Structures are given as structure tokens and as C-alpha cells.
Image (cartoon, rainbow, N blue to C red; front, top):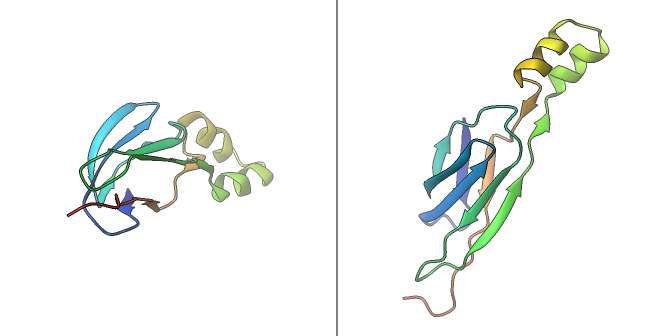
Length: 103
């Protein structure tokens, strides 16, 4: 599970996209992301008070996988085959920019 929160703390409509497709979310929220599905793009939708913006979050190689790999563990091949060698940060903070003239 990954916490996805707006930097300004306000409820924000976004689209989260990865290899599985696009999800429409309202931040703050928690979302389940499958490992091995590539980078995540979060697009803030333009509203009366928010400017549109885009932020990319990279999927990173898990340190446990590297430890298994360098110890010649059979677990490293299993992790590579199942996608478990990848992980996302636990928190994704999305920059949200407010429009100048918003009531």
C-alpha cells in the first residue's frame, strides 16, 4: 500500500497511471500498486482552484533482491520472475499548485 498525499493538504482530484491503466482518485488516499508494473504518473486535474500538473514516481529495485542476488540466492530469480524485486516509496507527495484567483 502506498500513501498518496497532496503537498498542500487539500482534497485534490488526480489520475494515477501505470502499465495497468489509469485510476481516478481523490487525494489524500492509500492505493495498492502491484510490483513490477513500472513507473507511476500522477496528473493533478485542473479545477476552479488548482492548476494542472504532472509528477512521475519511479519504481525502484528492492534492496532485499540485491542482497539475495549477491549471495547467489535462488530467491533472487523468483523475485525477478514475480516482480517482487521492485518497490515504490511508501509515500508519494504530489505537488498541487493553487490558482491565484480562487475563492
